[in-house]
Image (tube, rainbow over the protein chains, first blue to last red):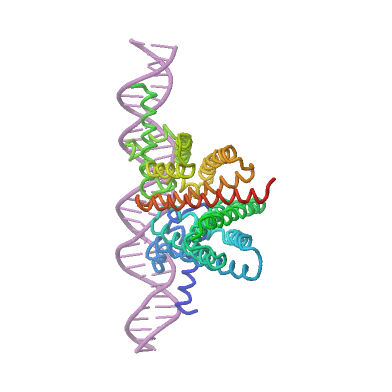
Length: 202
Length: 202
DNA sequence: TAAATTAGCGTACAGTTGTAAGCTGAGTTG
DNA sequence: CAACTCAGCTTACAACTGTACGCTAATTTA
């Protein structure tokens, strides 16, 4: 195995170790360099060959999580294009995501309100992407004026993320109930923004 | 000063110290017993005369925060009763609250998605109170059926808390913008649930 | 007033932390 | 093949952690 390959592999095992530790009830700021090293099977000081800091590792994890989110969006769009209601499909896709990648979503959720301003900003940026894409979609599909669409998209994303937080630790049955509830709530918003627009035509 | 009075006073200064430390960017789980003791001006071991644990202190703080939230609700109701739009008044009151008691709201926000299941549950319970009271109000004032009112209330609270998170670190100008935005979004929901109900009359 | 209670303190200890310093051995390069 | 690079290791240290133990002094109780 080449030197670079080996290094890349170790780096990945550090990242995996960190996600593993996040799986139990921990924050990024609450896991220590030594723990990560232990979990990754390397000496504590070897950590520095890959990351300057725990902070640098943390930002890497947030980036990876953001990547996963964007893949999620792409998947949702694909599914919608091939038939199915927008709201139903989006919520189902989202719920599947947080079930299959619970530690990724947990990371985003925790660090969104977490201790480090840098992490908070990074997560906010990822969520903003999400909102932007949704509002583009709404403008295009529903022909709703830009400013209203933006408000609609933002509130929808907020609701879905908030519901996702509740769903994160729930079993399948509770998750289904949460899905159903949030779908209805999203319809309120859709109906409402439509009514708002029609009452005040531009 | 009586012994009990003195003890109560020290206990309060421990609580104050903890809130003080939360003011900087810390989680409950990230502040140490010794730090709290230092900030409170007592010896580390004296802490145990008042709390079994840092966990016990943490739950106390969450309880205090919940108390403050309930006072907030009462204040909002009073203001609404004495005239003013429900949505405008509620949002304004909420924003004033998180401005004046930013560390209290920060605590709730962080521990809601935080590390400790006990804290998460405690915060969720407080938010549930909030939602329940709002849905009672909606049922009573707007004559909307119970199940729809519950969904409406839940989504409104979620939106307001989520907007509050963004407002927490914002300056006055940004805060005003966030307020205005969330007010419009709440109107979407109100209009939408009304439309939903009228489309499907019971 | 004598005895009992107890809030707060000082000392102590074992465990964990981040990271500095320097070594080794294997892959890379000329 | 010889020189170089560098991922990972071991050792070391000072800082900090939670908490056990026992003392003191002041209030409370009998």
